[in-house]
Length: 314
Image (cartoon, rainbow, N blue to C red; front, side, top):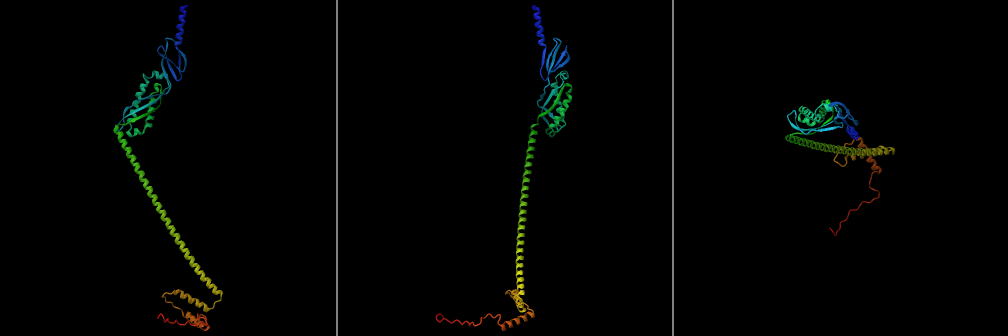
């Protein structure tokens, strides 16, 4: 009885010990007598005691390999320090378990050699400005090379690119010179824009001044023209009034004479009067003397006596 009890306990312990629970996103590689038998996925499984064993536990989650900075020589013989980060996951547990002795170490070394090969084809400036290109090339090369190890490389990132100290100083001086050049260009463009603005303002001021002077001249000319028009219109209205009043030839001749007198305007002018005008004027004078027209002396007015001397003051 005791022997059977002990045997039952041993069997129970063996069964419990050989029950395996595989977590999610994990796979177990199972060997039977040292040879690959199967791969267990997530769930509960039981191994055959003393015949089967779990050879390797493999996670299917995405992992990353952070490589330390390593020296890399560019095409123009500049040595710089570059560190990388490789993101990968295991897609085949069997290949990962039997493809390489140490797949992670192999991936790290492969990353270093691939980086040296790619950067060795680029110059310093190309290396500093071609991060995306380097990442893409390294991802493609590593992904193809690690397929036989059951590893899928998702992406590769360059963390830091550290050039030598003298190169950094030269780059800083170059950057400072470039910023100074841009500042000078911006100042020159600002001065240019200000000069253009001032010139445009002066131009607009001259145009407005010229337009104002033109408008003033036009207004003065229109005023003079209006005055001449009104003067001529008044003369025409006067002639029309004379015509409507049926003035005789003598009156018309007198008007002509008055016009000639106005032309002289009190200045030392020589006026040539036609014979018919003189004859008409003479006839008008004789007519005015005989008829009394044109005499400014009022009838019956006594002449003004001369002023007597004051005896008290002489």
